[in-house]
Image (cartoon, rainbow, N blue to C red; front, top):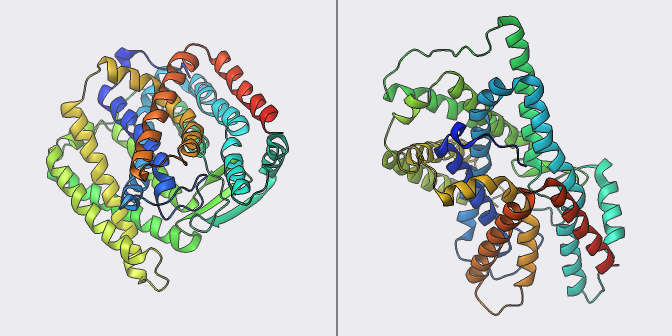
Length: 412
């Protein structure tokens, strides 16, 4: 969790994009109790916020692929700097250790809260945390699949991203190691033939069409909203793997070919923002005509999934050009957020669910509850990362275990 490059080796606008996306991940989870289409979430607190569904749909389409793109963009420089062995050992430390720790000790708290709230609604006392935890862990041997809309007892947390990203990094590292053994020139960059700015629009459009079509086919055969879970330990939406892998590889390709200057020069931020607005409107229109419609046109369903990729690409290009031109710097605030964004990602979901439960009885509008939960979650997650995790990984591990023990003793 301290495994960060020095500040001089960092690309500030990329760091800032990643930090903002993680803040949006927090907001995404904070609003879920106040959206009418999320019965599977751990806390259900009606009435819904008007138009909150659109906010969720937009973030769900863009957040995680952008994080995979950033990871791909930074993979090669990290590999070249460290070599294969140190690269993978660093990923084990940064991804696998937190995945195991948080999955075993943090993740059970959220479904336990859901079970306790349901028990309270039915007038039954809550079950003990210890037997619940035993059941939670032993379910790790069971493979289960269900659509997100139907899975009221779906157990989903943010740690799936760590394991899938590790798999992508492992594949990248193996490929790079094998290629470098053959070429013996692993630091050589591949020059790309110069193109005009607008000429890059065609490859980008082809990339979106191919990836969107692949996602559409995967959604038809697997189910676009289906989560496959290995018990309660790891969850993944198989239909979305092509999107995540596609943007991860796009990041690697752009960095390897040194294409970022050309990509940034295609258009100004305002043009990409206008494109993002147009694709957002088209995507929302298609979603409104397909979600919950049993006899929706197959053509319209496929179109909506292709539009999703064009929306994602336009948002990414808007963020890249905007942050490169306007926020390509580090200040105290940006530096603090960047240094602690990963810790915020690891910690925030449990904190979010706890605060969502605490504000349920407040006689205030749902929008205000969302604001309270968002601010408190960001503050607590930041402070925990800043003053505990970053200072001592050992102290952070001890703190997680103490929370687990307190839960066991409090809810017997």
